[in-house]
Length: 444
Image 1 (cartoon, rainbow, N blue to C red):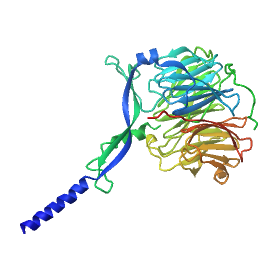
Image 2 (image 1 turned 180 degrees about the vertical axis):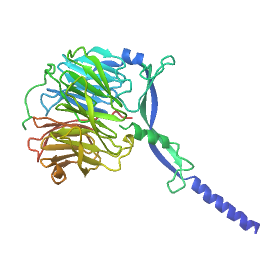
Image 3 (image 1 turned 90 degrees about the vertical axis):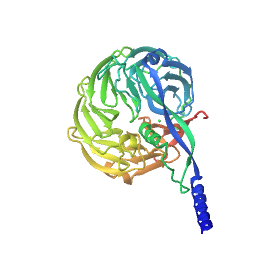
Image 4 (image 1 turned 60 degrees about the vertical axis):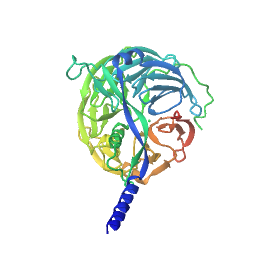
């Protein structure tokens, strides 16, 4: 009897041992804190380099024959696009903590964590830093970055002395499982998954003209729907996570910090149209009257469930994309909302259309372009906006699309995680790819 019990116990131990020995290899993204003093930011946060490959592109901006592509938190690629079929990468302006940019005349405006910078673009291969407005963005322009002040500087709005940012590291680990794929007794990498979600947040044109070394022309350029910077005449508007900061750029080389408009948390994008400013947030679309450019006034907000929310407008209709993503609070669906803005004091939701995973969008009426992330790019005829879902013109699935800028010359600029694309859509039923600048990430 004792022998039988011993055999049973050993068998049970053997089974338990087998179960305990099951393993699974897991690769996770971890975020490692990196601290930068504001003194370091201002002494060595800007430099000029030769042309570099795209690695992690973000926002795009166009001014005349020049393209500006943000390298997330690292700087700006400056590209001569005189011939869209053969764009020439001229230089890379390294700016620590850069998220956005805008251009007026020969002046480039950019953020650098807390600061606002002005560059002279007279020579696009060698931009010159003219001015830095320190602590222009106390609440920050970049997701997942913390500002700290020293002990003697307390209270809201104090000047930060230390910035904490996060670098991504790939962590390969072997975890014990219960032989059914369930990690035991707990998953030590679980918290990093939450951080991962929180921080994730980039023909008629076959011209034979050669690359130009001249500076951009007069006037301001055009940004995409994901932009936080916008220029209207002599005012630059920059939306941070909770405010709109105005800058007077009537003297483009010497901007002056202007008024601050409080908007509330979750502000993401800005789109100027006629005498209004449309501000996208994680909880709705704010409409501001801009009849006095130095004092925009919020006149209405159309709320929606928490979601990432860029917006574009044509005449009486606004188009808004809502995307499922934890960083924005978790919308229950991916959709495109059509909003009646004929009365800016009383915007009305007209209809919602299901999407797959929408990001930025652009309109050259009657054509609407919608970026669908890793589901590509969709083009709709919106002659009848209420029936746009019945008029899908094209669905390009070969790219991961983040944002677009359609120009009146029928040139489409598109940025995605896999690179920068240009299309001639003169024939919108059959757009033609002109060029692509691919992403080339360094090997780990």
